[in-house]
Amino acid sequence: MGAGWALPSAPARQPGTSLGRTCLAWCLPFARPPPPPGPGRAAWSSALALACGKSPVTWQLLPEARRAGSSTWKMNLKAAGALRAVLFIFASVCAWYSGYLLAQLVPDVPLSSAIYSIRSIGERPVLKAPAPKRQKCDHWSPCPPNTYAYRLLSGGGRDKYAKICFEDELLIGEKIGNVGRGINIAIVNYVTGKVIEARYFDMYEGDYSGPMTKFIQGAPAKSLLFMVTHDDGSSRLQEDAKKTIEALGSKEIRNIRFRSSWVFLTAKGFELPAGIEREKINHSDAAKNRYPGWPAEIQIDGCVPKELS
Image 1 (cartoon, rainbow, N blue to C red):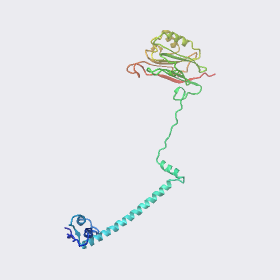
Image 2: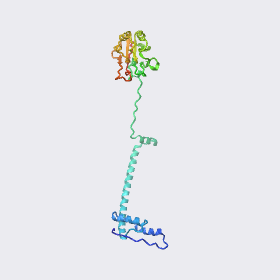
Image 3: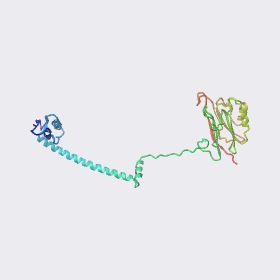
Image 4: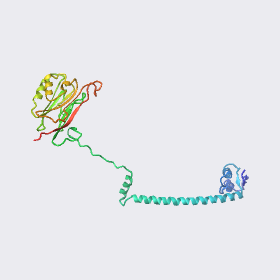
């Protein structure tokens, strides 16, 4: 089978000897260092399993072969021991060096602060921008000194009502309950910056074109007039009202249609600076409407210079 191997016979049980001791005596020949890797090692392993198991047949290594295998195994043990010693020394050096580096990172502060510093390593700083300051009438940027801030917003759809804001005061709007269908108008004293009156005039039902004309004509000199539409502002708008608004500088009053969005800023008794946007209009178009049957709202905002004394 393999050099140095023989098939021994099972040892006879001596009178007065237990079965366990007999099996132990039979396995002792295999309690030796294994032979070098190869066919001999495999045969030795099989023989050991059979000898110490339930089978009475086993392979046993002959004395001369056992001596040779024992010497080789002892040499392997010495080499493995030396390698383990080298690895242990190397691991110790690495652990010492890692501890040294960690000690350099931790400052001479209390333990809680040191732990926080270690946790903070690698964390990105979070930059928090300050919340933008709200400007008058929701402007993106503040108006220059000695100016009035204003914002005109037409209605959009059934639930978005028109608004007129002046110097951060709501002159026309749903919040104060004075906005309605038709043309909404606010009159402001240009000298003092105080509102004179604010009303809305229904241009879909009733006869309010005449009263609106008298309201506009009654504005005192040096007044600012702000006009915005909500819903329909054209169906019952009469010619006298159109002429009055046109005389104040409107170029779109005759172009207003059913549910057109329209905003207009004008002055009475003085001229506004040339660079100020005064008027916008947006007509209802089924292909472009933002809301069903309604055009998108439009707005004008800006800053009007105050009167210099």
